[in-house]
Image: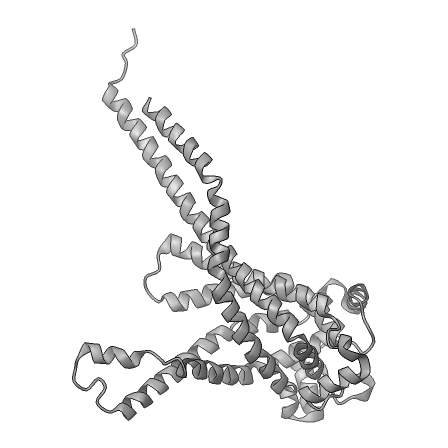
Length: 359
């Protein structure tokens, strides 16, 4: 006659299985929350990106054409003297509809790039926090992970950017299919990834932006401490905490100055990438294209279109991040609500498993 194991042993084993299932269920909820947060952030960013793309597309159109222009007449450039001259020229030549030439391709590229960049970055950051926690230099880790997300995004969306650049800088009306055929004839599949390496370098722009903001912030705080004189001199921890936060006026000013500084430094890379994507360079790389531009027009040619770039970037960034801040939480709540509709059934299944184990 087989000997039955003690009841206590069965209960201990069943409790261990129940605890394991409980841990798995908890980990699954945490991963689901991280995924929902990443999806909500990416969706909110796309809302702001779509709004600013449509509102400021005329500026984007003229800016891109100025960046792609050279002094060679045979290149068929748009010889705009500046942003205002470009807008007026387009209105005279093509009317209001000309200001939105190429909008579908640019909107598709913007949405895909924004969703992938924010989504990948937030997903990597969320998984990292779940696995290793958020202690330590969280800011640096977040910056690195979001930069990696940007690199992953640009690897997939660069063909859309190349197509959009080719369409918006073409003298003659060019469809998406026509741009695809043109790029394929120039270099096959590799032509759609023109400027990939420089795009990877440009993904480091947030690091430079963050460093500049921190340095400017420290300068402003030191200046304010010197003006106020007695702030922090009494050794009171409460008074020391006061000057460690920028005011509502100082914070945006620091952001604008930092944006101007960082964009001025990296703009030659932006200009070179547009030159690579806008025309057939016969296999020339970024350095060759920038070198040719410098020999013809001097160093200042590297900064052609900087004013248009800054006008568009500062305006769109202000609106885009304001919209993102306002709609991200409602989108996250909506996704949570839809996910919770399936939660009762999952909960019943989970309770049924626990009851079965107890029995």
